[in-house]
Image (cartoon, rainbow, N blue to C red; front, side):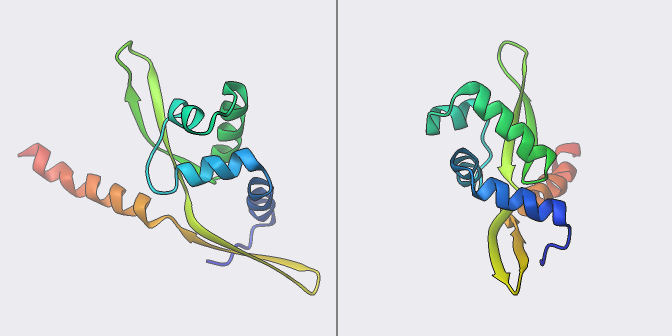
Length: 121
């Protein structure tokens, strides 16, 4: 999918230019992870991780795939990267961004949707 929205293009370029954001995107590309999992895995400061994850969710680069309740009753969000690949091309003064949506997210959402029938029986 060729990205037409210039704000989204800037978001993609900003995220890919930031080392911590790239770590977060890589970490959540194939499986959902909580903020704490990402922090432990990549040794990112708590405030940095929360701030950057919030920014990426607001800019549609990460999605909240699931919200779970922890043992102590708190909500914990599980995040997944919204795309599986991005191709950036700069030619004749124009930046083109082509992205492939993360199929794992769509597949899991479909599996959860169709499994609802089994839970109801």
